[in-house]
Image (tube, rainbow, N blue to C red):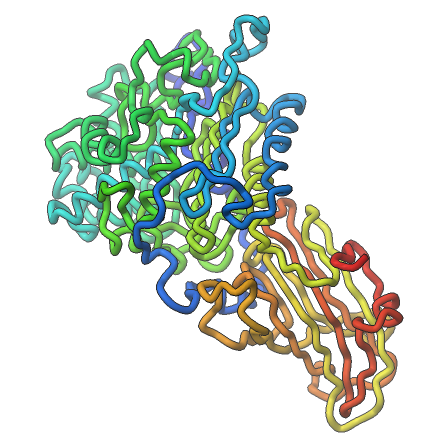
Amino acid sequence: MTSSFPRRTGLMAAAFAAGLAAPVPALAMGDPSPPKPSPRAAAAAAVPAWDRGRRPAGRHPWDRRPGHPLHPSSPHAAGLDEAWIEKVPGILRAAIAQDPPRFAGASVLVAVGGGIVLEHAEGDALRWADATTQLPETERIPARTDTIFDLASLSKLFTATAVLQLVEQGRVSLEDPVARHVPRFGENGKQQILVRHLLTHTGGLPAFLPLHSDWPDEASRWDAALTATPTAAPEEGYLYSDLGLIALGRMVEELSGQRLDAYVHDHITAPLGMTDTMYTPDASLRPRIAATEYQEFYGELVHGRVHDENAYALGGVAGHAGVFSTAKDVAVFASMLLGGGKHRGARVLERATVQDMFTDRIAGITGEGGARRGLGPELAAWSYHAGLTSPFSGAHTGFTGTSLVIDPLTDTVIVLLTNAVHPTREWSSTNAVRREVSTAVARAHGLLSAEAGWLAGQEDARTATLTVAADLPAAAEPARLELELFAHLETAYDTLRIEASADGGATWAPLAGALERRDRDRGRPVEDLVEERIELPDGVVTGWGGRLTWRGGFDLVDAGGAALAGEVQVRAAVTTDKAVRGLGALVGRIAITSGGETLLDTDREADAAAVSADGWERVGRS
């Protein structure tokens, strides 16, 4: 599997080779989920069926019909726990207070069922004069809910929408070679790259080229972008590429006869009433626009024009970057997608197209735990969907510190716009903040089971063990371990293992078993899975867990299948990698039975008190 480039890249050696006097900044690429090493083979092989595209019962979550248009609301009206929504402003304040700050300013909007339950701004849209000099308080511009931010790679969603509109009109097919519509693109071995390859970043193109520094003018830069030589064959791997979206933007222009900014305005933003969304904003809007980076290469603080160096070098309008917008306008765009392509009477896409747009196309290429992509959107991105992650959650991030999360299962939109590169891109990533915000909203929805029990999986890089012991009688039929389990763990990277030891904990062996659906949690049938039973041949649980509480059953046997007897310990062990992603794991009632006799039951307080919890928090009991 080929993974995406990291957020920060080194200085471009080619620029120095070209003899440039000023240093060239690390190129501002898109900001997909950060690359990770492949997960352990055993964990990848043990991913339960719920992470393999299984859909909830009933209509597909992305088979959407128009709902309520965006409107003011409240957490209470949306059925949310207001205390968790109230934590979000504090998350932003804490990020700004860090040294160095994660961003100078932010605007956040949370909408559920079209109702805006939170709209808030923190910090400064403009705080720095250059990379090291803070402006006096009187010269700073506070961030507001109507501050206009450089969306960076969120722009790719607008390009993808434009392409899919042209597909609906029959002007292009997803199976068309891109070179059929942009002949220059076909050079250097790219004749077999299809439109869908570029939408899913599987065309084999390089991640980027330093167009702004290595080519002298706009015409030569466009030529270089379109004629780039691929690094791999189509569908050989997944590599997040700005060049692919640049080519698609040019294809939109060739097919429509309009420049990309004019097309997006006429066919997407204007019909939706997104009056604060644009490319190349007018200078009169500068006081409303969040500043980004001080760039030594240009000798200026970027404020009011696109931050992405290549987009700027291409005239400010390109398929990969260049759109400016407010949190509310981005939420309107997201509401259109949640409305099956329609919002307030304006139809931008057909229902079936939206479903196709948010259906994964690359799992066969990236494997278990790998990236997931629809026709443009990133899907199931634990790195910023966090507590809202499911096989159906989707949207995108942007290098400047922007993100959009859409969860169709809860009808939720989270727009977080920040100027994380102000005054420099070298300070910190916004992913930690994105995760905190998304998880707070998930907790407000009550997605973490309310069952009493033990909770773990919310700390980085550790193993937490929950252990009980029982004296098992010698019997022909094995004793049985039963437990209630809620799990929401980053697929194939964070795992819960059910194990047993018959030698006092010196060695542990996995217990094979199964999870069965207990009921329709929270009365939401749309969140039920088609499967009633999930087999766990290796005793490993990972992934999104269907947002349900399951009843697990495991025979207490040794590696040869013989019933265990005598003093036996059983445990649930949660292991997390260096970046926690989900809601964690919650183990409820634990019971061990043999021959109709209950040997242990944590509903009995004495048995619960005998549980050894290392790294697990007991919850739900006074």
